[in-house]
Length: 505
Ligand code: BES
Ligand code: ZN
Ligand code: ZN
Image 1: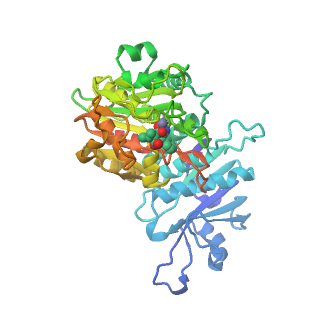
Image 2: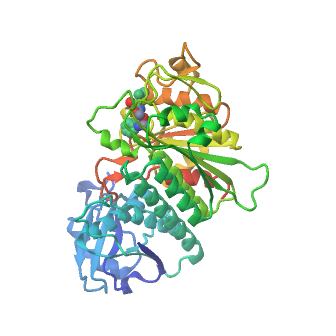
């Protein structure tokens, strides 16, 4: 999708599809909700073209509601699409992002190849923030997961144009727009990886895809295999990997800005890259097992985040480690009752081979510290329990350090992604005590499963400030929404990038 930012009067453009945004101005005080929806543009020609339909009451401007006008007389554009943002008092950049996605998804099945969105002018939302959100949303809307359908028509949008008023601060809006392009493309890069089935994205292929991205973006990258994993004594990672014919890969990516001060932070992004999770010897039921191709979504989010970081160039050092392996049952597979000695030296009693994500992350997190990380963030489709707790709306976030969490919380305000903080407290530690080794890889009951998984990871983090993201419930959209297709969501990429930028813009 090509993108363009124009500074001119929207009503003079001859667009294939011109999109304007509207909001519902009715308040609870308005009897019969008689207030009309308001258009968020100061362009009087567009407002004039819309007047009759807005007055009709047929369109209420609820979130992502659409109304199409054909060849409005006053305009040069072929079609005018009005999209609702919901209540005027609640309009934020997050509604604009979704509306832009909805505009693109409206156009795609109608064979409309070019979409032109008029930036909304609304108190409290800068044109720069709106431009960034709009183009991010357009990329999100443009992605479809039908890569392998033989009847697939290429319905991708060719051109997405954002129109800002001619008197806008060009430099500021342009810079924000460019950020939006980078973030939108990087999120889709992650989604394309997550979408790949297990046979087409083995740990080896995941390593190759990461290395190719790094080469293209000028990042350092090493992809280590079994030998190095054994040499580093990553006994927890290897325990999981040993059951598969596919060799595991330890992917290490590095971003080094030229002028970062010597004592400045080193941020580490650690991702779970289980390219397929059968459960291993504690095998999962057949029903729904196919979904476990997306068990590498945390790792893919880190690769996508590194892609964006390489282009945005924040002034902070970043390392990323993705532990890629396949969790398979076999004659060589690890078994319940086994003891695995992690890289940190801790003895893990394996109670369930399906709790493999925490095993690979244990060594990934420890290795990140060894490489000099001062702050850690991990992302993983880690537990079904997190899905039970938060459903498919919020992902879980855990942290051992309030200041580090605060950086992440602020990042969420920019990204618009939904994460809900869950506790890491010593009282839960008793649930993972082993009588044979140091720690068990599952809790002693099924209660609080997302928290016991986080407590397990905490053992390998020690005092280093750390954030853990459990994205099991939101990495794959079970249903499409007006602004996003069913399938991989690319969740966490934008939030992780903002978290990184908060340490060195
Ligand atoms: N990959 C799964 C978690 C998962 C569940 C991801 C649903 C996406 C959607 C993970 O490896 C797993 O199987 N966890 C077990 C842990 C249990 C054995 C303690 C689970 O959640 O059941
Ligand atoms: Zn599992
Ligand atoms: Zn898993």
